[in-house]
Image (tube, rainbow over all chains, first blue to last red; front, side, top):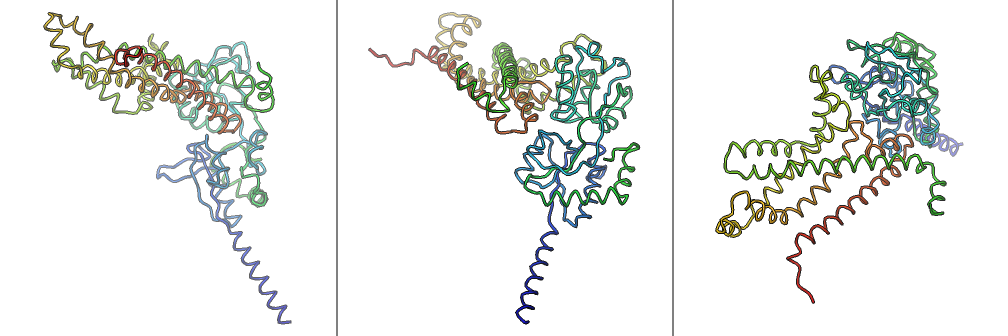
Length: 250
Length: 240
């Protein structure tokens, strides 16, 4: 009997140890500025839809989270090199990416939007009219893939690392039109005078998911469970309504 | 195409015919940019270097200021100022200048030219200043005018002293041209960045481009060795 008690208490202690280990430290990477998903406010504090969602998710998972800033180019390599554990930086789920990383269930999907100057009156789906135009996209995004595949030989495509550089060139009239994630275009282009939406938004891809290393399958289960809870208990909607007046929930 | 290369190309996802073409086009642009900016830079640098050695402060101070500014700031910053700065000038879009500066190629060419001209000016100036005074005195004793002295004595001897330092500048310029990719130009580095972002394969994309830069550098080193052998042939030991 005593042996059993000892064994049971050892087992309990081990379980406690396991439970303690599960209160893990997680580092989450964001690429800023990508308004309104992740950006720094006037005080230099990291904020935005995904940042708040990440905070809620960490609380739900009981994890100790640290937020890391990482430029988009180095996102996946940084994850694989263990510089951080999760990417929550509007990374759309694509088959190419899914070969390198493990995605959670999608947590939002925004369309790609066409934005240009007031004077722009060409139908962006009319390939003949678009011939010879210069289109700006962010390098490596689903918008980039779409324009490259659909209009590759027709328009000249300029690829930018940041949305800021691209908008500068749109203002400077080096670009005729940009094709960019809708909310980003709304924040960066439509907020300026003399610019408008010039075409129907295009739904692209399977939505945005949290990216993790392939071997972190348990972590993915936890993330999925936490996201599902947030979507259900209204936390997700509260955060979404704070940043968007349209639905991006998935 | 040899069998084994075709085999190699078929066995991987990244180096397909279309990405090889992208690298090739990037290489063409890199070579164009570097070659043009070096030629223009050298053409600018020779008169500037002569002005820089002038004893008249009205002539040498502006050149000093120019080389100081362009050697004192990073090329990346110069490129940003020229590329984005020019587009912010009110009304420039309505002038003929915009036909030139709308394309990313010309702002980049301008930045590279001004930058390399500044460094080359200082290289040539150093070589001119180091001309042995005996050579100049001898030329004067022969009654040569300033222009004739410059052409016959000082510049040829300065060229011999400058060529080694200049070959370094040429190689630096080739590598510095990689920053053209930040202003949307698809040069070698731009091609590598595009391919990298498509396949998320940093090693393959960048090691391949590094090899291409090394191949270009090898050609430059080879060409400059030939040039040095030619210019410095009087220093070669006489052998049977």
